[in-house]
Length: 370
Length: 256
Image (cartoon, rainbow over all chains, first blue to last red; front, side, top):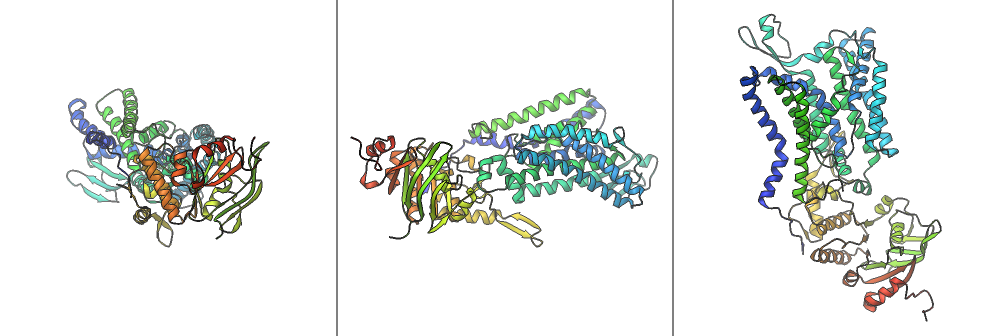
């Protein structure tokens, strides 16, 4: 019999290993606890409130959407540096599509659908371009997507009208800002589903929007991504390519096609982000995504996706995006000068990678990507 | 005598001016382990790559199971039933055992008339357990990433994968390299088991003890040519070394 012995880990190592997998959850929980206590004491505000929780959810939408596609790409041991500007381009394209079709007499809802298709379709074309050059011409993803980000930046600015596309139908504001539930506290208030209550004055100030449409759409995209990564052949092959390119090639996985699809997916989620920002601000902006690229990569890394590929999860990225948003919001509510946010987020990113590496050390891996 | 499983006649492979494989003919029969011996650069890897579809030979015939075959790509050799296990094993270390056995050929559940397909992990696990059991391989856990497995265990996964996908000829490149001694024995035992189940194995190696432990027949190459072919029982290590370094050569007149 060929019984192979199990390479065993000591209990203490097992504990560290488990802790390193769960640290992001623990960190998020401790941070929320800290702000719940500290914000009322030092900031003179309430951290734990319906409104604040909803603000945080709305705030993570763009970072998370950019991070979702990026998660797939980084698990495959690639990187997509173009997603920030792809989001901008998508925002501009969707604004044009909505304005043009609405002005041509298309009903508002259909115009919004056309805007969505323009945003995601335009973004996916950029992804196709990235993927073709990376997969077929074997140019490193870092270089290709860096180059594309400049090209797309130029295109976004060219297609916009002095950075912003305005004159959109006012009605689209509802799609970007209204929500699934409404809760009006106090006398004459109540809980409303789908229909915004007609309230004014003090009651309007008491009204909380719960699960704004962009949050709902993002949640749907998150669930689709979880399904795709965990339950389908597409997800399995993404892990395989990131874990061992040689194994993927030798076992007959269509690696080139898969890589092209990955970059299209990455661009597409950035396209959804651009579309939602157009709805939210009732305008297309050619600069909206610029600052979000690095935050989205930070969210992915904090969430435990290995930059060397082969490991990571969608839930991790959601946690990573939440950590950044909670940290930023909490520090603002503590009246900490805004610059400190960057310093803290940067420190968290480095700590996340250190924890990831210590896990490899415990498992006795000689380094990732080999 | 029954027909050989693999039969190579007058194979030549050149790289520019270099003749890497020079007029080599050989037969591999069902149920035997053949060791392919030779120093670095003797041409054994090139020969094997011609059989496994990595290179196209410039001259000569390959017959597999009686038919003349040509493999423009590795996948063609593989779908014909020739499985090559290289030293890197072509395993994804971040995935578990079933995921590796079914890599690229995953089992799926279909929903909505095939519109949505999900991985059938349960079925793949069951099948993996069965295929490992058929080879009498026991693992503590199949559902952990295989990076936590030892080198010998990973070798066993690669072999189980090949067998699951109905390999009818196995080519193994230095399978005991980088393994501890107990693990070497286990891998050699697996090779014997393959032979007993009727799957012939070509073993590329320059580890003499491996050769005498499992090989029925030995082919020695030197500078692209096949210099001898012997039954294991008819030779010894020092004679083989002489063939490997070119001191002996059956194809030429004996050196004076």
